[in-house]
Image 1: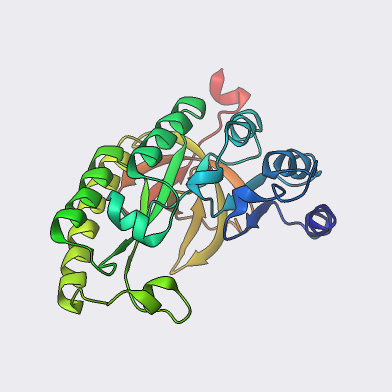
Image 2: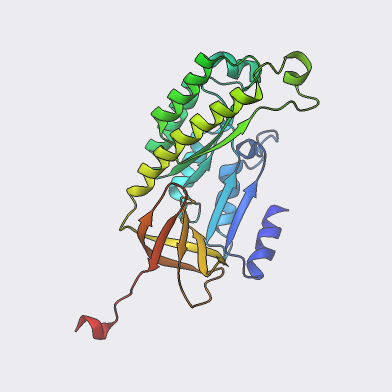
Length: 266
């Protein structure tokens, strides 16, 4: 029972919960009158002691408005969504049997952003899928450039036993070409996320700190941005407000926000 496990973790001092599933937004849709993911998020949010709730990974075909409304209305549910596109070309997506088109994905991202302003969106992309031409790959580049997503998890295609692609399609994109495409997307995404993160410079955000790494505390913002601060205090498992002092494409630096006392205001 998911709720029982969440309650048990809360009693142990856990503050952040991640609901994990390969197609997590399909949760409950195969059970007549059963609770779906939106309902589950509401129930988990009611558990005392839990301060942050996340979920991953979603599928574009099952991400409905009820889920968007739950994320927008529940303060404990973090505004960060992992929703793969895999490729930006119609034919490649059809060969992958993904069940949606790049146009479908674009519309979904637009709707999510309209319903959940300020949310961050992460995606997955595979380069070098069997038969993918350079022109088709450029369609993926165009989608990524247009949507300006916060995160792009990139992977080079490799044959996997038991898949339709392995059984019926020739792995005809060379390793060198896969790497070239991977690097192009990597460079593109680095520029995109650097611009996104730069807008946070000087902003104040609440960060949940996970651990200390090489003398600095590492934590995550509600939108899952990686933040480092220097502090002599034990911040493990704590959520504190910080001010962003430096931004880069993959992480940010911050200082604890100074909270004025009554004496300082006199």
